[in-house]
Length: 155
Image (cartoon, rainbow, N blue to C red):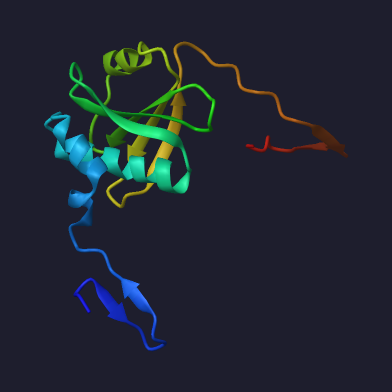
């Protein structure tokens, strides 16, 4: 047996990943080759890529370099047939200017800002050009003096 596999008490063979598997991942290598010069932003982009493609099951997720801002952007489709969305992965310690938000929004596709904390937790925020009116609730039930609103369910 190799050092990457081990046999459990029940006879099941488990594969373990090498300690530097992220550096060997083809998408991580692609993001590094975009040559943005900020390894923390590349790492954040990889974590967001893994979340979008493996957890949220987005389609056609790919990394794109933005040379004027020295950032890695991700593009993908939330569901098949939907428009392309741009995701800006940003480490929590890095600032963001209005100019950089405008530059990403000028690409023409909807934008998600994804802030990546040092513990690898992700927070997504939808960004738009101008004000965005929120969707009304699906229904409002009158229960005495209080109104209880049901949240819109994502499909």
